[in-house]
Length: 99
Image 1 (tube, helix red, strand yellow):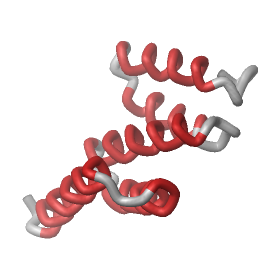
Image 2 (cartoon, rainbow, N blue to C red):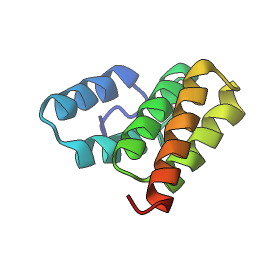
Image 3 (cartoon, rainbow, N blue to C red):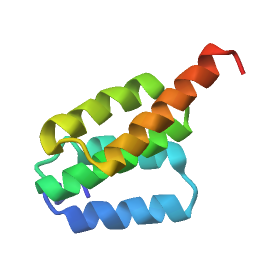
Image 4 (cartoon, helix red, strand yellow):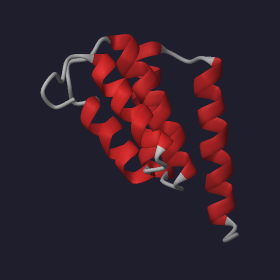
């Protein structure tokens, strides 16, 4: 992916491979790296959505919230952003309660 950073297909194949191997930290790092490349807006939006979901799964609610705000700024609110927001809020309450 690093040789052809503007080609979204290469990034998606790499992400698929990392996901199939269960390499969660590498998957997240690769999403972050891909988002620094000049990819089409559609691919960037999808990668941001996936990154938010993975960060929530990892309990990284502050970072997930920041990326979610970027999604809303670039694409507006949607049912998918509402689901992300609800997951972040649930996790925030859970962490606040010390569970």
